[in-house]
Amino acid sequence: MKVAIVEYGVGNLNSVYRAVKHLGHEPVVTDDPSELHDADAVILPGVGNFRAAAEKLEETGLCDEIRELLGSVPLLGICLGMQLLMESSEESPESRGLGVFRGTCVALPNDVKTPHMGWNTVEFRTEEFREFDGEMFYFVHSYRVAPEDDVVLGETEYGERFPSVIGDRGRLIYGMQFHPEKSGPVGLKLLGEVLTGASR
Amino acid sequence: MALAKRIIPCLDVKDGRVVKGVRFRGLRDAGDPAELAHHYYRHGADEIVFLDISASPEGRRLMVDVVRRTAEKVFIPMTVGGGISDVEDFRRALTAGADKVSVNTAAVENPELISEAADIFGSQCVVVAIDAKREPLKPEHEHVADHIFSNDDGEYWFRVYVRGGREPVDLDAITWAKRVEELGAGEILLTSIDADGTQEGYDIELTREVCNAVSIPVIASGGCGHPKHMVEVFKEADADAALAASIFHYGKFTIEEVKEHLAERGVRVRQC
Image (cartoon, each protein chain N blue to C red):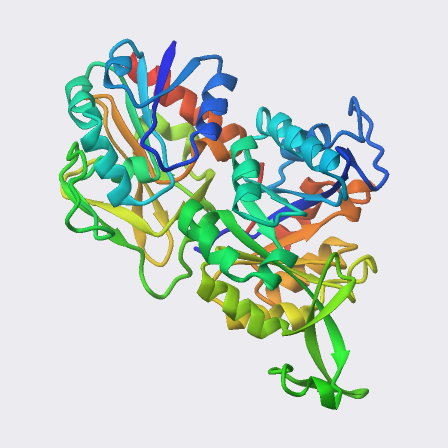
């Protein structure tokens, strides 16, 4: 299947590209809204600054295109890509996210080292990801999502309990704060299931 | 719960080949860094560090190829260091597939490189490697030795060395660690020159002092000869990660054995 990896000028997309390829899919890195049309799944990758990414998505028309695709193919936001699914972020209060989920992004607590960098446990709440419950994944971030609705599928403890996986199964939208593409065999497996299994 | 402590095998690479002799059964080519990195990946390494010790442009070019080939099959974070002198070197390593780039001598000579790289690529990409050595305090050091320690032999301080640990500079390692954090480094790779190669354990005092001085993660390096040394550096110095080479390369311990040892002693590690 064809997996579009959205290029918005900041993050390092190569690792996502290689992980998708390793899973046997056909990755396409693109900033062209029309290319998203023939994709079987779309990934908003991570790393970077909320403002720069939000601006690029708006300028290129990718924002509208992604909103149009919602519900028809699986959409996965990774790290910053997950945060972009929200309406806004404390990192750049004047910028607008995609608003796929209601809520904002907030800074991690002051009493822990930031960025939250390294391997940490994800406790999954849903049956869908039961086999991944308690596994460790690789995180690198300083902000985290604060959704207003009940969309939390997994949580992680780091100075506080925060949503590390969110999703809406009906609309095929998922967000992960960690990097499944950097989380070893378990991460690759989860990535594969979200890209394919979610569309079942 | 806190983050898991990371176990990081380090591979020294010269002209595209692993330098220290490595013999593993089941490896097609034990001298190929990509092959060896994949071996450690499958056995539960949390991260891989490549250190390029080539001196030639040809060696540097081969390193890029090593990184590219490794990234195709190793899905954990990868740090590349050695010979990084400007932002273009950062870009080359990151484009090839590295997640982080470690810089040492060039950062000492031009500290602005740290902030420049952090601005462009993000702090999470920028690792500053600090090589430190205990030095007896002499009168001529008093203006740079900000942190002075003492034992039965007298007073000493931790001095920064560059060019692969060969050249001392007038910098206090603890002061330098704080400075690189201010400049935007995302992590410190701290090597004790005294402990390196001894296999008698990390320099706990040095590591503890640096960990206490900064709020970014610190990778302890130099001296690991047994998993108990990792327990020490995690429990007594509060390092975030432990780097080791020879205990893995010579097959003395597998990564699984090291992690089992740590877990049994109450250190939180990622089990595979």
